[in-house]
Image (cartoon, rainbow, N blue to C red; front, side, top):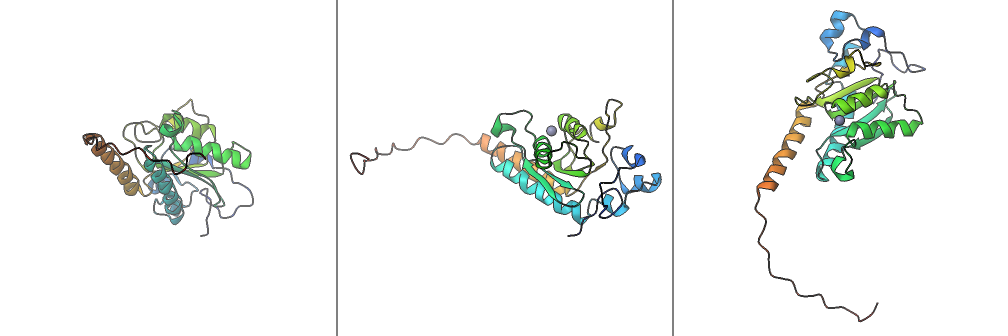
Length: 222
Ligand SMILES: [Zn+2]
């Protein structure tokens, strides 16, 4: 699939600079773009844009891996403006016992290592759940070019829902963001996972069965 960058040009010979006007608002919508006269291609702001859907689908697949391993199902993908996937990963907080092992942090680290440069201003990060304050800080540190998320997080969403952390005066980089890409699918994945976990916890422990016989060695020595 042919991809463009989200700044307004196709196949630019070098990563384009984000126009200042685009950087101002934290959450961009087509309506914002039209009113403010942003240089962003309006179709690129559409959450149904095939490039967004394709990348978010990969992030959802990553989230499923996290869920199957016992972590909250959140997945993230980093894509550069040529469409190359630099990182695909998922939340591993439980598995690693690491409170910072959110999908976004792991994806940014992997993307930076893959190109030997932490500066990701020509990249987009796709994540199935709106980033928390920690991850929003990491996105600012990475100078990410674009944030695209699926489900909004009414508890800790720091891009647009609870706060607009990246837009504060303390932020030296204000990445544009696109919300609600495959939002229903992302939300359903989370809801189903938490519902299943509640059911698992509500089940009484099964009664102990008969003690199996001791296995007989097939040979006295190995
Ligand atoms: Zn986070």
